[in-house]
Length: 79
Image 1 (cartoon, rainbow, N blue to C red):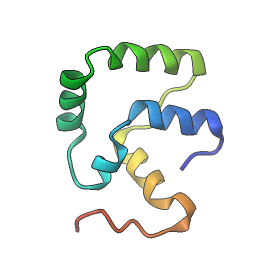
Image 2: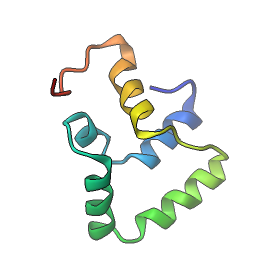
Image 3: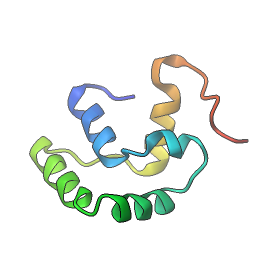
């Protein structure tokens, strides 16, 4: 999923809806839902990523990393 703990935290912070991403939902849809349900999350995410000093991967790279984590096949992706 990540090379180290900081990268893993960045991925988790950037995509708290990662399981839904693997379920086939779009990042845009999930981001909108997150802003609606937790309006303070975008600011908290920005602050955390700044403190970590990292830039999270693009959504496509995040999904690839999640699917490759532990060398397990990603069974949730709809083909």
